[in-house]
Length: 223
Image (cartoon, rainbow, N blue to C red):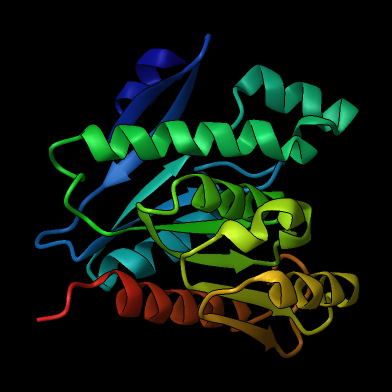
């Protein structure tokens, strides 16, 4: 498994305490910024949805880091117990580990950093953005649970875009409440006809378009 992973394009292995986290870092030529992905449980850096959005971001000149916040063993346990997906503190700490690594990496440390979070990963992204408020320049949440980061939302300094499906009714209300707690440049966009996973035709494309525009606006250095 380790050998196979190492053959993946842009493969990186990060140390988080006693575990290793696996990811893929891809940097287009003349990258204008960098986006680290924080996905929810049941997903991974290999998720077609994550891969699609990441490709659109790279087409816009943004580097991407897709990595798994949980180990394979933790993912398997979570599918049964359903605990780690809601351990926002754990997920955020691991995103901070990735952030610090990116800041120490010669190829990425000068790039403006943003987070793209989905489901509970969005809460982790906001919590990590609060922890590294002087570093993180933008956050985008797709079908996220920013309400799970409620205690720290007031400390977030990064401009934040919340994207929710128009048919994802409980999550819409959760995002509205979280939006009210954010004291930064912020926006809530509801994509008509979309459910939680944005599987309907054209809806994920809309997410990628919105995210790309937000990150380019806030991470690209002014000339």
